[in-house]
Length: 203
Ligand SMILES: [Fe+2]
Image 1: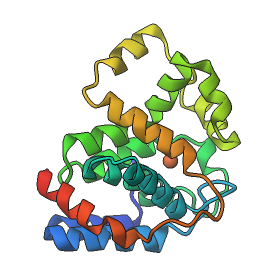
Image 2: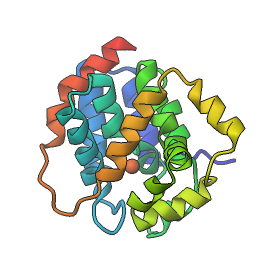
Image 3: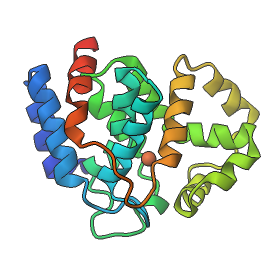
């Protein structure tokens, strides 16, 4: 199987390996700005989506781990260039949450990794325990819900309830679902530089 990471993502990977916390934050923010201009959905770009999610986390008083998880939760889409030339990437499940988690594994504390890894099943969980949650999702997110497995079985529910950072993942998921507002003004990526350095040092 060919490497799911794009050539640019492979370059980022080798840069991060030898990076100080300062340049770790620099390189990641550069990558987001360079690759985040593609559409996330009908309303926002990937970068706008991540920045809106991170700002919701910051405004809610979340810790640095959760702010960074919100900023980077869809990094997997960018690492795979999944959207490149296609408008339907949200309808195809290339497991972006696992790609991002394994990419970041060596550099981030468990709360960040688990919140990112669980943000897709967290949507399925929220819709399973509260069927009205589905009505609040965007059309694209409703389509990917079915693709990602739909309502959880009892077994799946019990297994996600045993996750130590489930609450973080559920919070991230709610911000994710709200971070799709066209034209919303939010602070620049640089605002999260200190958070990225902080979580890098926690790993
Ligand atoms: Fe998202």
